[in-house]
Length: 123
View (tube, rainbow, N blue to C red):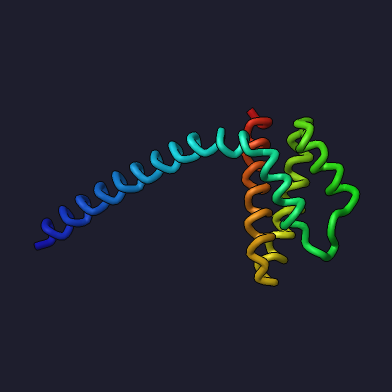
């Protein structure tokens, strides 16, 4: 009886491990497939953010404008990308609280772009 329980636990553990490994490889493949699409549509993501994603309060600060201009020009450094990411995460929180889905989608798109650029700069 005890042996049957141990065998069942071992089988379930290996099954769950295999399942998690398969999910992890699928997510890694998805990340590799979507990265070029996000970079390809950098201009559209930034334009959509500028039209929909800027919350009325505080709006566009000079520092955020500077960082977005550097993002558009492709000269954003790793530390600047982290700073822009923090600004966007605060905006994301405000957009969720206010229920502004257009702004939320625009912010998340720009966050994905900044995250990919930061990952590329880190390498």
